[in-house]
Length: 330
Image (cartoon, rainbow, N blue to C red; front, side):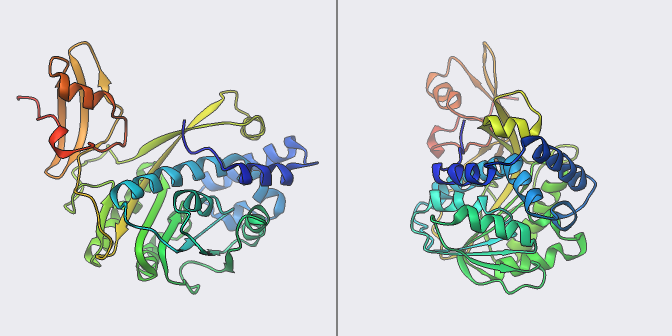
């Protein structure tokens, strides 16, 4: 499992939970979830401090894990990128900022922009003693967005009406001095939002660092869509808040990493788009490559290539171009 919350954040959440009835928080979580699934935004779902805490207890571990996975990939593809400033746009309870700090200890200045006063208040209490962000309340479509080396919009585009999403993507890109990370739920709708954003960013001069190994049109066709998964452990309170029994959950997410020309990037690699299927003859993989979509079979008898394929999981890139097995004969 990956993406466990930092100890300081766990302790801060535990302090917030002291004396709070878990049953009430669970009910508030269920109501907020219903509001989001009905197409509502945080303004409708998060009306007060208890709603914000219920959301954080149920969702912050998963959104943190997704951001951590995206940042791990950013570090792999751009190892020389060491941001000193972060803009967390649509910061919510601040989990994305914690993930960024874990990935890049070089971060010194952190700015939050969010329209939800309860989220900003909770995020500030959680960060107290760990870091001091510049918190600004405002809508991403109109608020002042300070420039930063790293800009993150995590699970935020869904909050913007479709007619305004392109404008928000443009504003986020204009605020980016280095790398822009867009993270959305791993649903067809989340993928569609990111696909449109990707096109706008490429047109604006961005280099797509990940997950795409090329700047061409996405080769996937409906009903398929590009998304990934990260597994995270659930605490006892997390399970109670979600009325769940399993000790873990799998968070599905989609993302785009876009960079300014000055950010040095590793060569493009093929990426695994689904869980590899291992059988006795070998391993079958679905890959997005610099040349487009491919399905490859890596035979067990090809020991070197099979050893490479065995180490790969959903979302991984080939470690070295020379290690990538050739496509299976047709």
